[in-house]
Length: 247
Image (cartoon, rainbow, N blue to C red):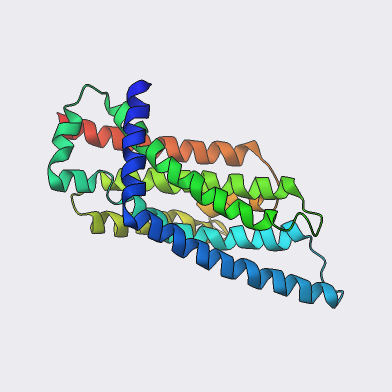
C-alpha cells in the first residue's frame, strides 16, 4: 500500500502543480457560483409568489448538482488525458512500468491522485448550499446524497478517462475519446426509455440514471454498487492494457 500512496502523492502533486487544474477549478467555481446565485434568486422569487413547492435542498442543491454533472462530463477528460498518454509520449511510461510496483499499484496510485482533485471539487460544491444554513432549514441528508452521487460519478468518469489514456500517446486524442465514451454511456438512457427489448438493461447501464436517484435524496445501494463496479471495471481494463505493454 505504501507504493500506491507514493504514486498517488506524486500524481496529486503533478495535478495541482499544473496550471490546468487550478484554471479548471477556478472556472468551475465561477460557473457553479453563477448558477447557484441564479437558482437562489429564482427560488426566492417563486417563494414570494407562493408558488414554490420544493424545498431549498431539492431546488437549489439538486438543481446545482444536476447542472454540475454536465460540467464534470467536460472537465474530467481534461484531467485524465495526460495520466498515461503524456507519459507514453515523453518516454517516462517505460520507466514507470519497469519500477518495482505492480500494475495494480500503478493504476490505483494514479487514480487516487486524481481522487484528490475530485475531493477538492466536491468540497467547493458542498460549501455553496451550506452557506444557506444560517437563513433557512436545509435538508443535509439530501445535500449529502447529491454530493455522494457527484463523487461516485466523478470516480466513474475518472476511471474511464484513465483507461482511455492508456490507449494512446496523444493527450488530446485521449480527452476527445474519453468524452465520447462517457457521453455514449450517459445517453444510453435514451435507448432505455424506448419500448424495445432489453430496454431495462440499457437503462441500468446509463451513468445518469443512477445519479438522479441520489440527487433527489434517495439512497439506493444498487446505485452505489453500480458506480463502484463501473469504476473497478475500467481500472481493470487499464491494468490489462498496461500488462500488454509491459509484456
